[in-house]
Amino acid sequence: MTDFFADISPIRFAPEAEDDLSFRHYDPDEVVVGKRLEDHLRFSVAWWHGFAWPGGDPFGGQTFDRPWFPDRAGGDTMAAAKLKADAAFEMFAILGQPFFCFHDADIRPEGDGFAGNTANLEEMVDYIGAKMEAGGPRLLWGTANLFSHRRYMAGAATNPDPDVFAFAAATVKTCIDATHRLGGANYVLWGGREGYETLLNTDLARERQQAGRFLCMAVEYARKIGFEGAILIEPKPQEPTKHQYDYDVATVYGFLKDFGLEGEVCVNVEQGHAILAGHSFEHELALAASLGIFGSIDMNRNDYQSGWDTDQFPNDVPEVARAYYEVLRAGGFTTGGTNFDAKLRRQSLDPVDLIAAHVGAMDVCARGLKAAARMLEDGALEAARAARYAGWDGSDLLDLDLAAIAERVEEQGLNPAPVSGRQERLENIVNRYV
Ligand code: XLS
Ligand code: NI
Ligand code: NI
Image (cartoon, rainbow, N blue to C red; front, side, top):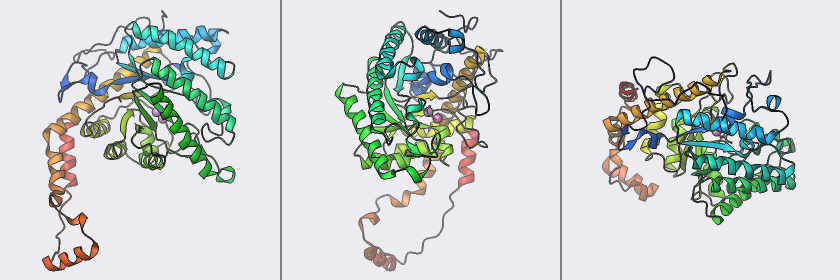
């Protein structure tokens, strides 16, 4: 037990409450299009931003004062990691969300090389596993941090040094093991530093081959040990390297096709990454669904003015509603969920800020999902879409060749008249619900 969240009681659904620590829109048991909200949204808390991030920015370091941070915990790094886990599970009990996510480096202290890291990870997996068995949330996904340590400064799988590739591959093995042991629903690989700063020192073709082989190895190993969860790539166009190899959903799909993994690996789409790539979140979700690779989401927004990954908690209901509309159209989550890969602003110092951030985000998502469900139930958007393409029903046009089409156009004297796209009317329909 810590006293970090000392006086904060479990958050309840209380739409009329006066305080800011109640859910006004998120009632886990409310049934929306045939499913409880909790089962639709599958909320997850990210260990790294909530408990490991010190509050730094490019101009200054740590602003948060957490008892498990090295400056307060003394030399016993394993005791500090356990204290951090205690606080995390105390927050989970307050929020009542069904899932969490972690990188190896979030939950275990840095060890002495690979063997030390692995021993620390295993000890922390036992510690966390016991808390999960005692009724804590489940693991949405695990992942490996292959980007913070200086050994990875030139990438992990795409590193010019094969020893770094080996260290990273061995580390991914331990992280898949950990995820499997904790019953994870997915395993995620985000590109980290898989990209480059300058072409002048980069063999792009070779690095891409290394990344492809690395991913094949991860998939083969996961299946070999009987891990049944989904394996997900998280696209991101830039940051930390200038050009990341997993730029966006379309790029990742091309990469998967190239290595024969399109049936094995899906995507974890992050809202902020979509924006960095110059897309909307809903575009990336719709594309992933249409390619059959939609897996899960990281629901954290970017500041539209900043041009970098600000990882803010969601607070824009119409934007969130448009995203969940695509999630619902795709049939909803199966193994995936809504992970808040979001961090506090660095001035939000108090433990209660962390709770309030998640409470607000869960409420925004609940409002968004309910609006999306009503839009879908209304049917007007889907009916308009179907009507727009109705001319294709029963058409054999795509089976013909150009000459046959030309003949037909002439024969039938085709002279198509333009039809309204009705965009404003459709936007007005959305506006009824958000
Ligand atoms: C970074 C990513 C990262 C992944 C997990 O921008 O969002 O946090 O979600 O490695
Ligand atoms: Ni991100
Ligand atoms: Ni993310």
